[in-house]
Structure formats: structure tokens, C-alpha cells
Length: 313
Image (cartoon, rainbow, N blue to C red):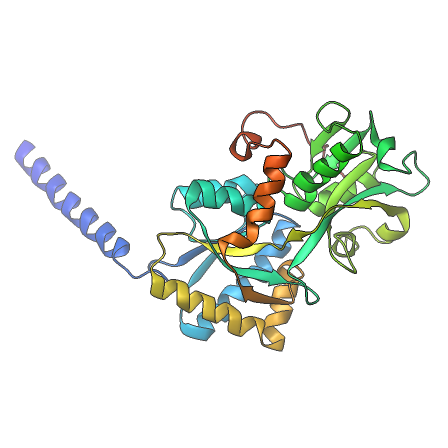
């Protein structure tokens, strides 16, 4: 009986090893070994996944690459997943990308373009008719940032507040809302007195938030705008084979040049098109982090300020 059991276990181990080996040996981008693509949860997760699934289908139609989409719970979760080999492609905000490059050796592939620009800014908002009129009025108030690794929703707004005499860690009651739209909702619902979000030359995150908060622009106003920031990007793991990387790059560029593809990109994150980029395009973000005294890795460790309880818009 013991010999029979040992033989059975031996056979099972060979079968399991063979199965796992065949899967690991399948080319990246095949049905057996799909490219794992993660997007940061900058907006409502269900909407992002639905739009990104359509984009994945378009990539497959372009050149046969199979892509599986996910939206982890936070910006840093995407970075950690790439570092652990669970993600091959990340759609990163600038600061999250800088950390991903530092920690997971992510390599910038494409930069997003909106309305002809490859840069944007952070926007600081307050409620109309409320106690806030200038940046200095935020002292002692509750404030919603987006995520510890949000460039436009945390890093640049914090730097702007510091330049105006407000220490975000000492002079504010900060929370992380885990989404640009969620920060705006917290502001509208009077859970906070100010909120940070992304903006560009003609719009900001409120335009997307209007789907859940009608008339949000009539209820809030822009107190200030930050310095310019290089746009978010598509970055790949350094372990991705060069031929797969090039096929993915060309597929996304082809998609961004077609009307249907541009609509998909707009649905994913208000993207008009994609352009090639390099790591050096994000040096200004590194300089801002250094000037702000931010240790990027330390910024995402330890306890974070609590976010407000869920509320209906």
C-alpha cells in the first residue's frame, strides 16, 4: 500500500509539473499566458474595467495578443504587483510610474495625450459659498487628497500648499479618498473643505464626476492650479520580451489613431491619443519629489489617514 501511494504521488507530481511547465512555457500574450494589464483606480473601478476590456479586445484584434485586465485597490498595489511579476503592463500616473521604475524596473512605453498636450496639472477645489477663498484659508481644515502616489491629486497639490504656508501634514486634517471622483464627492458632501484632483487646459476631474454628481461645477470652484506635470503613461515590465513589447506598442498606437480606438481611450481615462515616451520624460516628477522632501517608497508605507465613510452623491 505504501509503495502504491508513493508511486501515485510520484505520477501526480510529474503530471502537475508537466502542466505547470507547459503553461509557464507558453508565449506571453497567448491564451494560456495572457499579458496581465493593470490600471490604477483613478476613477470608478467598474467603468474602468469595462472600458479596458474593450481595449483588450481591440489589441487582440490588432495582432492576436491576449490581454487580461485588472484594477487593483490602490496605486501602490499596481506597483507591488509588477514588482512581484503579477503584472506585465501598468497604466501609471507619473509618481506611481517613478516608483514602479525604481522598485519594479518598469519601462515607460507610451505617454497619453489630451487635447494636443502631453502634460497636465493638479487642481485644488473648494465649495462655492463655503469658508475657503484662498489657499491660506485651508489651514486647520479637512482636505481630500487622492492617493499617496497620485501626482496631480497629492504630490503637486501638497507642494503648492507648502509654497503658500500650509504644511499638509500639520496644518490640515488630510484623508486619501482613493479616487479623483471620490475626493470631489467628499467635498460636495461637506466631509472635507477642499479637494485635489487632476486637470488639463480646458477640463478637470469634475467633468467625469458629473456623471454621479450633477452640477458639480456649479457647486465648486478652482482655488489654484499646480505646476505642469508630464501625463500618465503605459509602462511595461523589464521582463517583457522585446518582440511582445513592440507588438503591444504598435497595437496601442494603431488603436489610438482610429476613431473607434480614440473613443475607447477616452472611455478609459479621457485619453485622446498615445505617443512614444522614455523614462527621462519623468525627471521633473523626480525633481518635484526631491524638492518636496518626499521619500517615494516611504510615502506609501505605514498607516494612511482614514478616508471618509462611503456616501451617496
